[in-house]
Every structure is written in structure tokens, then in C-alpha cells.
Image (cartoon, rainbow, N blue to C red):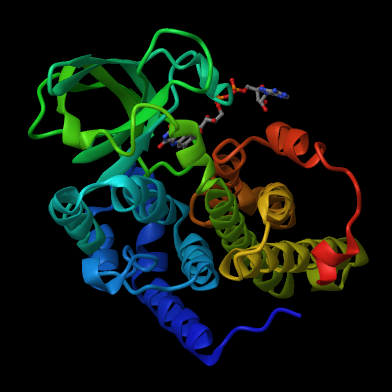
Length: 386
Ligand SMILES: Cc1cc2nc3c(=O)[nH]c(=O)nc-3n(C[C@H](O)[C@H](O)[C@H](O)COP(=O)(O)OP(=O)(O)OC[C@H]3O[C@@H](n4cnc5c(N)ncnc54)[C@H](O)[C@@H]3O)c2cc1C
């Protein structure tokens, strides 16, 4: 059984109050304007939410993964765009600085990023390399006490506003996974980092994405995060967290869609009774609730395993697969329950429907997750109930 501690419940209630008061009322306009939500992002920093998982010495709260998932779930219920920007900042954007950066780098970049004063992001994907990391072509060449980076990154979250970027690049020419390293790039201090094409999209519109062009960017050796190789293992080290966090985002979005659909089904009358009383709609809601329940269970079970230091690769992949596909299905059903009104901008269900698509590619597509899960197909009772 999954049981939250009193502290976790209190935290969830505090985040929910913030989301209801400040995020829900702003979410529609943020989506329409498709602009980075600077004000709310800074508020998240001031509230300590961006530093949740980091030690107090750097301004963090030293919280566990379950607590982090509660934050992700509640934020996603209010605005997936804000949640996406916050989760990039608090996980992939800052993790490698904390884990592999010098004390000086941590003071200069991690501490202000956790306060929300710097925007941090992670640039791995390239025009010719998404799931297939071995195909990245961004090169890092050593020249004396510096590295020189050249290449193109795309789909970079917060690209137009990012102050610091953790960039994956190859330190030698061969195709493969062994020669990938991570570098910390400072947009203001290093020349040759420019914004390429910005990507107009239908989902998480206020979590702005775009290309970053690296043209002979000179990077001091200290900014190489954790050695000339082993970048893939370093990314792999937080892959389970990324997947479980995405499962929590999915659960939050599915909840928002379910709540909206239920309220609408109780209020909308057709053929003399609220549509919730038509069995076809009642069954839809029953299926949505069942799927949502399952998504929440797998998400927090995987988060709990992470906190307990137990093996979690398969559970994290399952949680992300089930929860993200649930978000897609539940938001689709919600739009059907709203019928014509599901297409109207005045109701948020159309945004939930669009935003659900964001949950599919990041942290491994559903196809890749099935490849991961398919590597070990034995059913282990202990992994479920142990
Ligand atoms: C809103 C958004 C924000 C993002 N932010 C970032 C970011 O900040 N930083 C970053 O680096 N990236 C980011 N990404 C990119 C994301 O991580 C990639 O899109 C993802 O890795 C998938 O890569 P791709 O889109 O190139 O798809 P591809 O890898 O080209 O896949 C295309 C299709 O082929 C399938 N496929 C590929 N390989 C296999 C296989 N071996 N077996 C079966 N099927 C396969 C996939 O499942 C998919 O259906 C973001 C993406 C989005 C949508």
C-alpha cells in the first residue's frame, strides 16, 4: 500500500493551494501567449520548489522523490507548460552541475538556478538524433586548457531564455555511446552560442522550445562535467527519476481532465437528465477513473522504490508508459464528454488534450519504453508486492 507521510500530505496541500490560487487562473493565457512564464517561474524559486531535491547547503530542501512527484503532479494539474519548465530546471537542468560540477560551479550556477534567478536547461537531442543517442554529432575538441564545441541541438526546453545549458557532445569522432561527455555552457560568458529556429508547437506552448547553435564555443576545462566519457551513464543515472517525474506530470494532467469532465457531466443535461446518468458517459468516467487510479499507483510505487534505493529501471519505464498513455486517453475521453465544447478555447480541456502529447516523447517514447520493459519479461511478484 502507498501511504504518504503527514509532511508529504501537508506539502501536497500547500502546493495545491498555490496552484489553485496562482497557476490555474493564469494557465490559459500563458498557453495562448506561448511565452516563458517568468513571473510564476520566479515564484517557484522563491517558494523553494525548484530546489526540492537538493541539499540545504545549496538552498535546497533535501526532499525525497515521492515529495518531488507530488509537486510535479500538482503543477501539471494547473499548467503543464509551467510544470515542464519547472521540472527541466529542477532535474535535468541542474542535476549534472550538482553531481559533477566543482564547488565553484555549484555556487555560481546551481545556487541561483535553485532560487529561480537563472534558467538552466539540458541539450541532448539533435536534428538527426533523438532516441538514438549514439548518432549525436556535436563535437568537443580539446585545445590546451579549453574545449571547443561545435554542433546543433534542437528541441531544447527554454532555449530562448536559458542562461546555462548542460550539453552532450562527443569527445572523439566515432559513432557510439562511449565517447559522449557533458559540458556546462554559460550563455552570457561564452561566445558562439546562438538561438536557431524556434519551434511553434501545439502542446506545452508556454514551455518554449528551440534550436541552439554552437559555433566554436570555447569552454573552460572546469566546465567539463565529470570526465571526457561516461555521459550516457551519467544521463542513465537519472533516467528513472526523469521517467517517474514524467509519470507524475501525466497523473496530474489526467486528474485535471478527469475533474473537468466529471464536473461537466454532472452539469450538462441531455434528454432530460445530467449526461453522467447516461450509462455511456458514466462508463467512460469509470474507465477514466480506473486508469487514473492505476497511473497514480505505479507512479508513487516507483517513486517509493527510488527513495528506498531499490532497483527501479523496469518500474520507472512501466510507470512512464502507463501514466503517459493514460493521460493521452483520459484527455481524449474528456474532450469527447464535452463534445463541441471540448473544442472551445474557453474550456481548458482542449489544452489538456494538446498538452498530453508532450508526455509521450521525453524520457523515452512508448515504443522505446516497451523495448526496455521487453528486455526482462518475467513476472516477479516480489517486484510488485515486495
Ligand atoms: C516539448 C518537448 C521538449 C523537449 N525538450 C527537450 C530538451 O530540453 N532537451 C533535449 O535534449 N530534448 C528534448 N526533447 C526531445 C525529446 O527528448 C525527443 O523528442 C525524444 O528523445 C524522441 O526523439 P525524436 O523526437 O527525435 O524521435 P525519434 O527518435 O526519431 O523517433 C521517431 C519514432 O521512431 C520510434 N523509434 C525510434 N527508435 C526506435 C526503436 N529502437 N524501436 C522502436 N521504435 C523506435 C520512436 O518511438 C518514434 O515513434 C523535447 C521534446 C519535446 C516534444
